[in-house]
Image 1 (cartoon, rainbow, N blue to C red):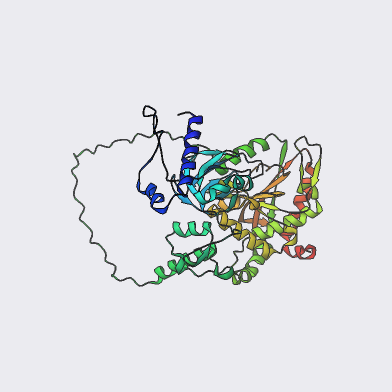
Image 2: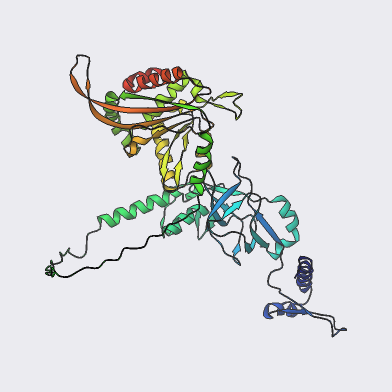
Length: 483
């Protein structure tokens, strides 16, 4: 059937359905009992009769993937929450997609039925093209044209973040993203106590509830005593017996590069086209190790994980204030340089989905304890794959802590449009000579810098590194320069 014929059939179906509402009730109820309706010309028996369905008669609208900014032109379908024929309401979750920056959940802006799904899981969806077709409910079909013009599809908040709206079901106030998390962990929302406004259940409440369950299971006494199975006698094998083994046949596996890995391909390929140089040094952080031990208890009282990274980040911000050229960016033709007012320090994280670099905003205005708290939040979201788009954009300088996985030296690649990056090695206890030429134990850490040689020279990088090094070797001096 051609498209023109299909439109004629659909128009007749809609008009006929609306005409039925004008008939008496005993006529109007019959279409629901019949499988089909016959529309034909009684005066022309030889003419072909037309059969149409009267189940749904609303207008079909396409739900397109809207532009999410940051130059993103496509996303990967991670999961569908609906199937063809399902009824959806406004704000119901339709699917979850993975962009180059973060995971996001798409919600419906219409009330109706899913008529067509355009993509399968792991397919690449293009911005501006339809995701699904939705048939509007009959009561909304009269104003559907106006609705299509006014309502544009919108990406919901990233998975794990709060949303502007809420859904009340069974007297539980929460969001679709939280409901999905609860469903994945088989958690009944009625058993969770909400800590949000008006008792709203947040994602943190779900995870706290799961932790309580783990503690209860761990503290529960075992009902059955532990029994040790008796050892079975080892049978004596004949020396003449030959054991035949088959070598398994291994096959190569091909998988599509997508998500964060696809972003890494684009950014790293572009970054390697920039002329750069590397500068390395070692730092005696013995005094810093002692200071952290004395402050660690204070952070633990506030349930904050206190590592060395907050000191490295704060010292970096103080050094950038003295050398602002390292906190800058240049345009593609390298004709203009922009000095960034905010110190948004990115921290490279190795996740199951690939390399991701979220950043801590406005470090120049934060205390070391506040930096530690924000770093803990980003690490927690990174492990769950729930980082928002705002968490991974807007960085001005990046650090890579290769020491966390046992690394010492590296040549990090600049994350454009930034102009420099640092790789921090592990802290090692090594012998060193003191001022009196005695061999003493020192805690030594290596640092590797990479800088854009188009705007930064070696002397500037060396002076910047020395200043950062002085703050870490004498951490008390940072107090004199903090605002």
